[in-house]
Image 1 (cartoon, rainbow, N blue to C red):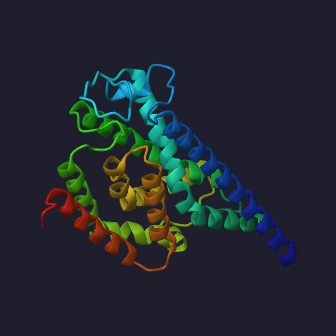
Image 2 (cartoon, helix red, strand yellow; image 1 turned 120 degrees about the vertical axis):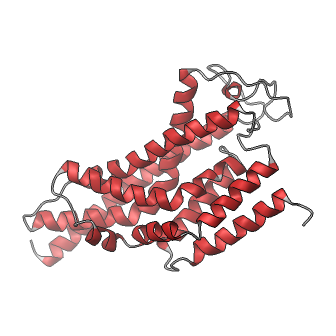
Image 3 (tube, rainbow, N blue to C red; image 1 turned 180 degrees about the vertical axis):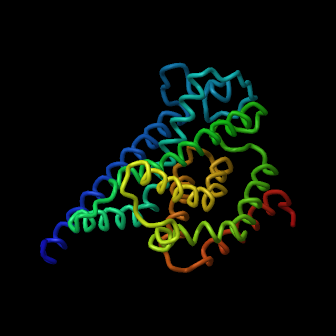
Length: 277
């Protein structure tokens, strides 16, 4: 295959992968928008009053006393689905450079007679990590709800708890493990070089995607915990965290963005706990 023809094929593959990612992200955000609208105060809710997962109330916007009930299996399934779709919508844009690199190299390897496993297997491994995180987040939400620490907006109603989460997330932004994980996410080629390159089998590509997702989780889990501070269905808060994750990974500033954002989190968290200071 000539260089011109190969370049044309590579451009087509980039377009296909980009289009697929755009569709995935759009569908995830459409679900988030629909769910946020359904849970707005006064919105008609079918299928058993979603707000009843946390509080017995007449109007979700009203300040009412908590009246938590035990979650049924359907409640866990609903909350897990919410978290899983939200993680796909928030984290897929930041992994796009890695996926585009994988697709481009994969096409060239195929043209050279050395095919590698499909990009889809790598992405499936990456998503698997965030599905696992969604299970943990569902458990955390159940625990907060069980102890009446969530308000109708699914945010912690305690300034002290919210402040402590912000401070913890802020300090994590400065830790060595954050730096190590972020460097792996910022440099796809370096990640591949340190993990033996591309895989020729589906299982190998799946494992490679899990490895990359694990670094991403190590980089971003504390930021995801901030959803409990601003509100799990707060669209501006969700978008802001997703944008911060994207900036950390694609803007070439090294550790500057996480350290600046970490300092701000600690400052805001301290103010929440000690507003008079």
